Picture 1 (spheres, one colour):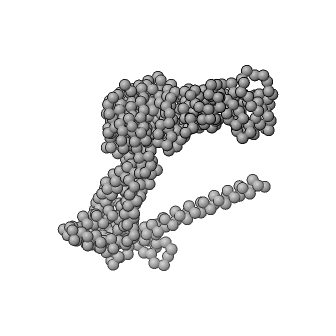
Picture 2 (cartoon, rainbow over the protein chains, first blue to last red):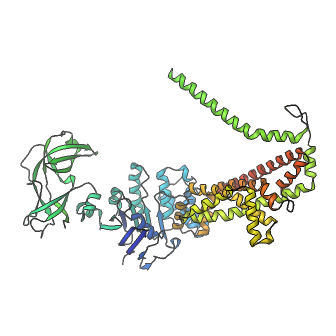
Picture 3 (cartoon, rainbow over the protein chains, first blue to last red):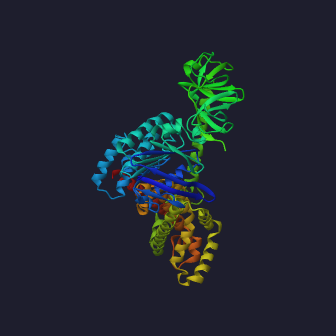
Length: 355
Length: 275
């Protein structure tokens, strides 16, 4: 039995459908991210689970018990908001202790738990500081501490890192994942940032236009996406509409290039399919060599841009354009307009059969 | 060269700022000082400053039997008006803010209505309305309380509303709910502590609006339930010194209220810090 279960949830705001036919099962202690572009319904889904919004239809079950109509304060969820929403009149310790205070927990118990949580989220020494006296990262930790204070049944995180700069965000990604695993809390995490979703989650729910597009592990979604949307939304990729030219060898034709495709079996010759190939899966040679990979094509460099460890090069092969990632050290030797040889050591991935 | 010019520019802008500040302070304080001097002057005819000082106008005014009665009436009325307005406005605003009620604009417009009509017209409207439905409260302090509450309502409404917007109440409310807090706990622990400054300002301003009103009070209760302003108005015919004395007393009452409310607010803050 799933620990948290969403069954056919629908939510509309006037004529706009915010969540459509949403069904999801989350296991105990699992970290699930809802990933998608702005307005795809991920925050609304989280708010439905929290009880801050009411579903038009559908059901939410927690440990097999329906909580769809249960008041927010009785659901036992802990939530971290995008704006953190710390109480400005309370210190760190008071913010963290608030959920216990409103439950009329004994003063000693509150003090003990607050000390424990403050230590856990790395805020020892900041107990008497007010939110405006803390940095963004510290405020985020307070919000996290407050959400954890009363051992929530589910931890809900609504884009909690979106207002932070990159280095703090990266360190908090590690921190949140560490805490979640240490405490074994079932977590629903909303983000539009694929890096956050892929690096923290046990499973990722890709959403678009109020619906679930695909659910899978980060590895599966990255390497074997089942939809063009997932393929393009998660990481950089090259997506082509190709024509099946050889059923036996599972070959497709993209312009003048012929490439093998994984999972193409059964597709008749002439069928149009959508295939993807990641930029890091394409090899680049400046001179044609008798490499092991048989599928090679000549392409001209259009533009290259530095990404750090790698450099992305956009190349054109006739009318077809590819994005290719090359180690930055090697990319220094490549000039604009130069002709390169591209090889495809592993097959492309089939992501959609054209209808 | 450029550095010298920028230093000069800074000096000029500082001078302008100081001049403006001093000008504003003089503009606000000079009339009060002049009134105080007039109230204390034994004789002041053709000189810039009084020719002598005396407390006799103060003593005479305070000995007037209607002084304490009217002062008590106005203090009581001010307090009632503030309590009524805060009790009406704060919960209503919290509800419409957190529930994001779309027709809040009706409240916004409604709260401005008392400003759109003269006090006399407002009084007449109230008299006609209550005269038709509750004739028993005509010419009573109850009707005056209703009228003064309407007058002070926009002040309380907009002061509190701006504070609620500034603290992003909707977010705090939802955060408190997910922490397991009930409505009453949210109001007590989250809303009220975060709007206490605006409530203090609204208290002072609402109280002052009621305390200093003459037109509405004169129209509704007149001499039947004498307020300080109405009594003050009646003194014009006797001696203009009494008028100056009562103006200073009125000013002192407002200042005292402000200090009292500020003191109470800071005490509450200190107590919270200690806890």
